[in-house]
Length: 145
Length: 73
Image (cartoon, rainbow over all chains, first blue to last red; front, side, top):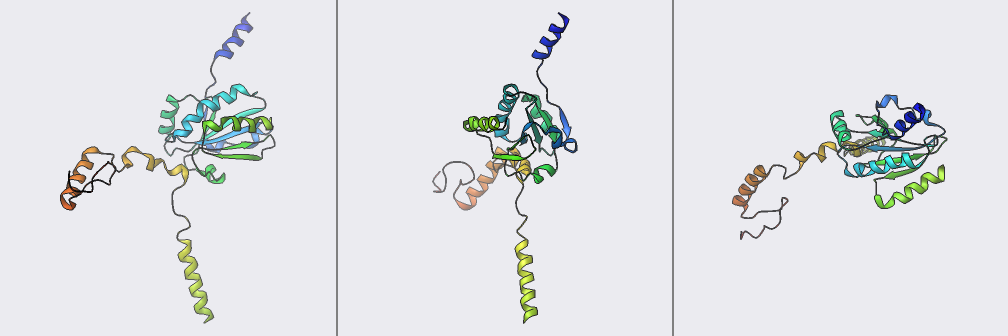
């Protein structure tokens, strides 16, 4: 009975975003999983739009096969924290104030997202976020799962 | 001749490379996106500027509000 209650509690407890330093990002840790890697900033409106959808992805696809990682590019971490106090995020966030990783990934717009397959190879790049293209994004993920 | 040509080529290349790192990166647009970076961020300031411009030029507008230009308002 106690176990059931605990499981129930775990099930209803919402996932919570953890914020890490960008130096802690090691994509090899995610090998074996399909990764949706998203670059965002607090001042970017389309980024805000993508958040509920990215939260949904985590519910829709099994955690052992798929995950969402995001990189925040705000120069000031206050702006990021303020944004996160208003917008729900269930995925891990890596703060890259200098844009080092963004430079490495050749981010061309805000937001930019990358779909990385289980072997760690980037297979798709999306510049911008369009709600009308959500089905296409999901199909691309499903093809890799 | 050859030296001159090489000097010219070097200068041209140096001049051309001056433009290679222009512009801001997408993630650096944060500062440009700030509300106080708008041309018409401060209404009072804008009103002053517009008044001076109108007095000097006998025309107004072209700075983010409709109308103006004919000097008839």
